[in-house]
Image (cartoon, rainbow, N blue to C red):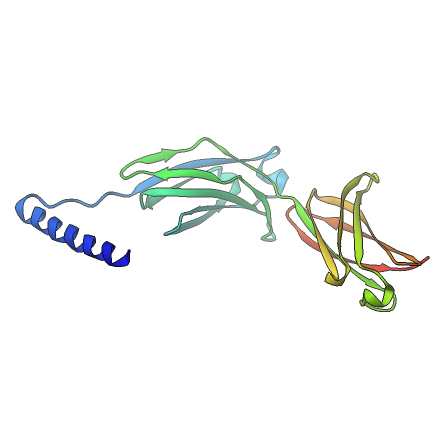
Length: 219
């Protein structure tokens, strides 16, 4: 396969040289440009605490990344190589945390043309929480006769937001897709003769990867 490609390339190169020697020089394809705008839903940049918007345009061969003040609301990317790309926008708060994000959009850049996109909405990124557990006598699950740990997450109004069980020997588990807010976390585990449980409270921000530890205790 590789040898075939090399041979074809040599043939095309020879043909191209012959054509150029017989006619006018051939200009390479020109570059393209992209104009876009964004909306930080639903309250705008200031109320959503988004300071910068990062624009990333990528494909298998190249990547363009530029950042603009969120309040600007629009940007133009120039000198782009023609081709198919994936576009994503990210919003960052004053502390540099990625709190808002757009969906991925397919974009085609054509030579000598300006592609204009409809406004891209940036939505709040969900948080995720790593729950770490241990027993009063350490972190050895087998010594306590426990194989699985179940983790439940409740909001401040005591609505259950998530529930998932994990292999106890992992020592921790991650609960994703959580809204920003205050939560009560309850971890529980059944042994042959005892039931272990532990509670903790945590506050999560938009897009945050938080961590909390619970101590599994027998009643």
